[in-house]
Length: 284
Image (cartoon, rainbow, N blue to C red):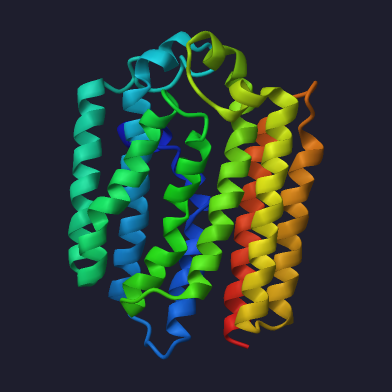
């Protein structure tokens, strides 16, 4: 049991709360197109979400283990502190990648053929901070695969509406990852790692994050307009928008003490509430 807790901590399993609700939106949205619910398919989509994220987070920890050991904020993480052996972490990554591809095989052909592309995007993120400050956008792109991926699992075809939810996730995640990266601005600059905070400074990074979050709200509103959703969707959209804006009142250029509150708590609540209202609206 202790070993399982260590691996759940390694991959920050609780952070699944960011993308999983949007995957559920994509899944249920697809059902509204005349497809019947399949418990087997839903469990396969859930398996893809979990294994993909396990692979991405564990790979990030594995690749960054030397930097994490040097950074006082991250030196207590499982690999640099010796709780999990790096070879065991690599084996964990490989197993999750194999399980992810296997799950897509049982979903449909298009998901299976696109599975290597999805894995490349979510794993490639870990390298990007070494050569581009746009690494946050790559992370956003990885999580943005959730709603369109779930929609593809059910329908086997692309559509604009789930893509709008993917664009929402892309801008939303990229924006709050920039806020989270503010904690390591000095360390990243000293170790020649790239990030928006290193490039633009604290104040400039916060403004960049605000722009991305403005776009995420715009995509939420556009999805509601194009989808002709009812009042429950708009309540969820309003709550999501308010919470996205609220996190920017928590973090100031001269006060980063509430970064974790803005990053995890506020965004986690925003994601869950939006998904709840949106999914219920589909059935009314």
